[in-house]
Image (cartoon, rainbow, N blue to C red; front, side):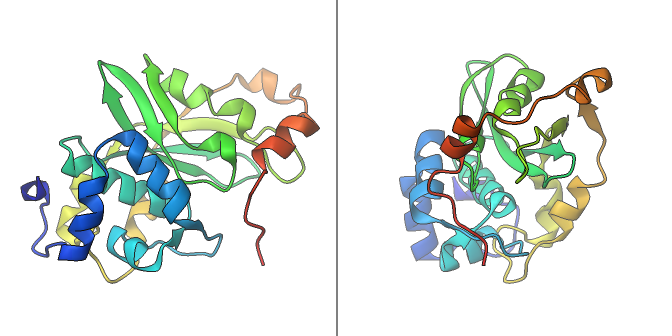
Length: 208
């Protein structure tokens, strides 16, 4: 499996031991939920650094999940969810029986795992809409990118780098995004229901 890594460096024995346990998308998601503390700081840890420090946010979780899926034979695909007056959210894609699913690290419970039941990427992206809101309760999800295959960055050693691979999230800001909801509907959006907002914020890490 590790032969899929197009990088001159190799994972350590300890790192391989972790990856050997991540044998399915479900177990990768559980690892992100239970073993990686949410960290809202401005950072972009590589999978190696994330395994070492055990804290990170959505971009870092997506890189780790893409690496784990790659070792299982999946292409390392991520997708950027674009928001207005809010942070973007990066998820890791996988397919099972021709249907899309996703793995994600988030401070919000509704922005994490998606079962592989979606026929299109639009369907998958739309499943995040009701759970995507800012601190004022505004529904903020507006678009989604095409799938980005991280193997194009292999020459940078992003999986095992001791530096933060900022070139990946920086690249995601440059790709085109598909509009998710009609512009005429944006001005008529209601704010998040307080109960759903509270449910999504249950157990979240507060900044500071």
